[in-house]
Image (cartoon, rainbow, N blue to C red):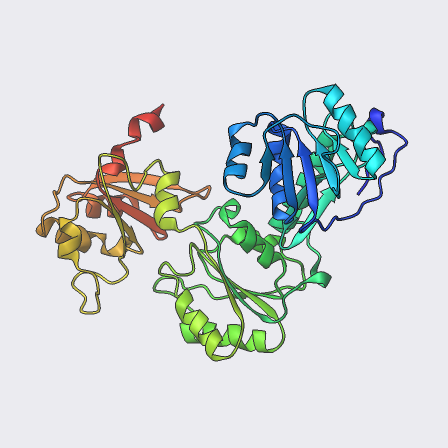
Length: 415
């Protein structure tokens, strides 16, 4: 890509864009400072036979040499260093050295990029970025303009706002995408990109709803909400929906709240698709078990206070014969307990924890609708939490945190 208004020093010059395949070919970089630090990683990734010529380097560049990623010649540039070279990069702060390297490159017909003077170079280094196997390279003659354009394009590809569906590399199949705790900005880059590429989206109540508004009109959205104690779509029906649409040649995104595998039944959905012979992509999501407490000013671990945190599903109470949780063991742990889906069982859970040794004065925080505009936090103790939840009218979804970490950042958040 070439900008319509190049930098004045390069005005009138129109570069011919081309991608160099440098694997196994000699490439020389003269200079071991910050410019080299920025340029070397891409050259290393290209597989070039990379030679660095510089009397000294900054530590980051030396680390690349120490790792065997390039050959460092710890000396000044000498005429003849570009023999048998395919590409050269000049990155010193000495104009005389830069000019000498450029002169040899011209004689040897080696394309040469100069960090100090684009007009004197025979090659320009583009501002480049990668996304999903594609390399975006922008040439304008002005590095800052190039970088700004590069960032805009790559960001658009990554967040799905710039999509090219006709070039989609994958066909029919299913992606289990964790949508994060509720804030649409907290979905992963990969998850948002796959969502933008979907033919069918099967979503649930806890998935970020705002993301659905960004979908093209042709995308079919299927509501698989499992509202507690209300209407719900049975898991078997969800599995069947995923399989049927994917077998019909569609790319199906199962958009879930949080992470697909943290009490999200993602494993069941993967098994159903695998048994049907369908390819499945799993995209991890930011779990509400850590992100919602963080958004409310609660770190689930804190140095000198806790060495562990335990995430427990509270949808089955401690007196229910279906419960798989060892509540006695949980009570004896000194670390943080994070309870999901536990609003209506919190009274019984708190009583069981106190019964098995947790102090009734242990701090508790309930965070409702975490990371969304409706987020609110209510504090209590194990001894008072049941009454507080009832008095405050707390409703799901809410994350409940038990432990001393509840108050560790309180003073900072008050300020």
